[in-house]
Length: 297
Image (tube, rainbow, N blue to C red; front, side, top):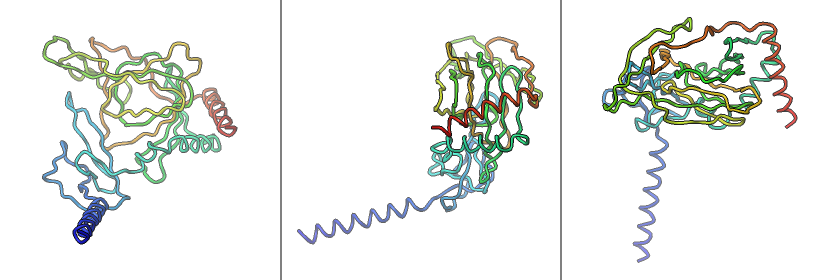
């Protein structure tokens, strides 16, 4: 019986060693930009190390949603086809956003004369905090909202994670639902570089509010390029919303759309412009206040 017991232990150890060895060997898909939709059968697998990374984004093509994959180091990673190797973007999102946020705030204040501050009239002030030193596809930005009045339903050209420093807002997520039992129509408007909108197409279905999320100080939210959302202010909130963004840039750049259940879209003239001296001063004073609070924590 002792011999049998020893044999079982030996077999078990062999299996464990084999499993551990398999986990360490990372099989990934090689590509610059993987085919859309991703075709596992025609993409060659290679073995890569832990430093390899990739991006995954959802791109709206008309009413269809496709997955776009690619990588700065020309390795598109997947284990299996729905699981991706971690890279700097995911690591920042997981546990480093607050640290990176205040690092960027202190740097902006120290170099304020050179800091790029912009205004979206009636919407927000933006502080462009530069690109990541390791991954230049990651960009940092601070948004200080002037008004969080409910926005039109839209998506973004960048996926991003937003870390709230002050204020509160409510985010609604929307989807086009076409169950074949409604005569509803959704008007899809494409946003141009000059912030104007043109009617792109009319889609069957109804715009449905599918989820509500609440953003508040210390909270993080992720917004993907495929998500259509709107935001609105929280009644009774006294502070203007101040957020830090970690943005992921993609190539080619996804298109931006606005959705409406009626023909025509009411959009203000909010083309982005450089901030005025008074706007820069207000932004500086706000960041200086936030930095002092951090130092005294």
